[in-house]
Length: 415
Image 1 (cartoon, helix red, strand yellow):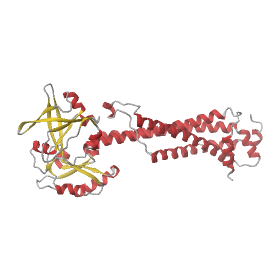
Image 2 (cartoon, helix red, strand yellow; image 1 turned 45 degrees about the horizontal axis):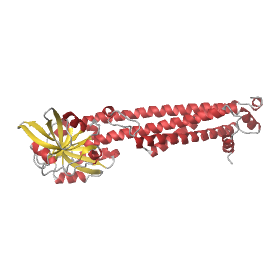
Image 3 (cartoon, helix red, strand yellow; image 1 turned 45 degrees about the vertical axis):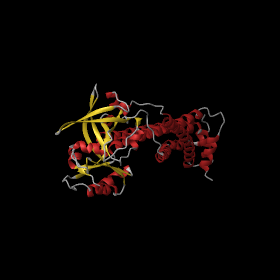
Image 4 (tube, one colour; image 1 turned 90 degrees about the horizontal axis):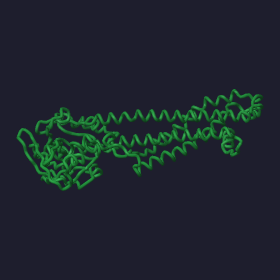
């Protein structure tokens, strides 16, 4: 039989009303662990949810990897690159790649009778993965984009619609200015989307790939590049390395050089900002663990002092200091366990409440989302529980040595 564990269970299960000092201390220590763990769970779920939501929005506009000409990706010039069927097949056949789609960019101006707005037209073909845009549609529908014929359908963002006072079904003229002069096209608004990612919503609208290629004066097999989606974002660097070896520095039949760029390189400011959130999480975790540890130390010291007579009796009966220390450490473990239970209930409750009700709102102009996003990461939450338990028990080892200073003879007269 484990004697310290047996004694700790008996102490923990006592329900008499004589322990007026230790009972509030136990409750405070348990509450400290519970609140600390709940705050850690909520913080981790919010930060992971926020990071992945913003990351997915950036990826929705630019995919994981962009393949294009060296001048387009490195110098910002709109230089076409050949995107033939063989090139597309080679990109798709790469290990770790989930989807590949062509795109072509063209700057232009949307004009109504009252106002005008400079935008970037993004031409996409029939292979365009519309899942992301579909999730952010607020009005109308996504047109069937083509690479062989122009439908004259236009998909714009809500900020554009508000600035130009447009709605689904309206017709609008677009003007394109280049070395060939000014050209006009008339489009019909097919749908309106909103992602709250202002740097994209304010400038990107979608048209047929065929229309964008024709407006640029390119050949039918040319495009601005291809957008590549990988199966696992965490293995993005591995897929990029394959493209760097097989695709970069290759030359198409027009003499243009292929190059690649990841979404972190396309939008470095967004990912740098998201990386800073990790620092905040570590600070919160450290503070909450410190709060839990301090409350547990205080509770344990009060319990030891209140149980001085019992400690003296145990020593008089031959119990060693180590045995008594283990008894109180087991008792503290029971308190921590109860705190972890209530902390999980509180933390999961708050996270699920936000997930299914969107109770806490945010300013989308500042945070790119209208409600606080949360993401349940069960392995990480389990790790938080284990780490909190271990750290709380470890910090109690030193205070437990107070037992060695309690002498049986003196403790018999202690009140």
